[in-house]
Length: 249
Image (cartoon, rainbow, N blue to C red; front, side):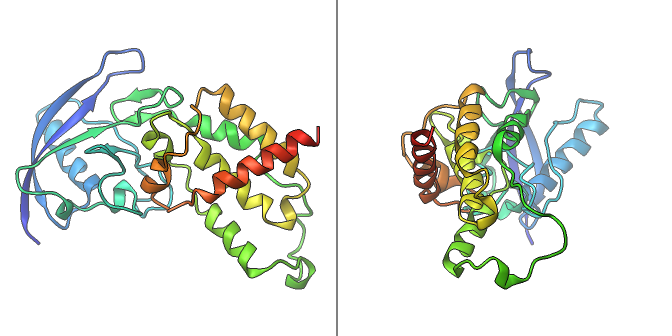
């Protein structure tokens, strides 16, 4: 473990209707310290100086919940691939480096304060169709719902999406297609998801459009920056599901 001195250029915004600006802070930390712990160190310094600490989201700090959604040096969650901000360590940065930290930039994710944004739009998309209707009684025998391992694995891969919003932040259009496609795919591939299959695609896409997310132009930035490596193939599946649903109207 080695000591590292960095400058944190952080977006500060008192509220959703306030004008934001960048402020730069000098922080001394360790290379084995996580990025969020470095923000904790900075906030301790600010509190000691009787200054307003930086507001940011975090919860599990294990790469599971996706709340630690920060735009760091031009990358959602930072320069580490396949990892969330809480899994980013200071050894990724150089001595004396200026690290720019911003909130997600999307009209659908308005800033609440500093680095915290309102991601309720994703919850509304889920509520529009991200559910299944089937008997939730006792566990069924595995042989009662036969499904190939290939489909089961694809459904599980899609289900690993944590809804952090990195795909939206990375997309030049602010599209939520990768998120929506992952949520549609995880059910469309399984027998349990067939009841709502058609209306799920229609309703979730409709809600996504209503909430102001942009259109997908297949640049692939979303998949490249996704901390859970959600595949672009899910977007192709969503398009097929949506077209089938429209044709069945």
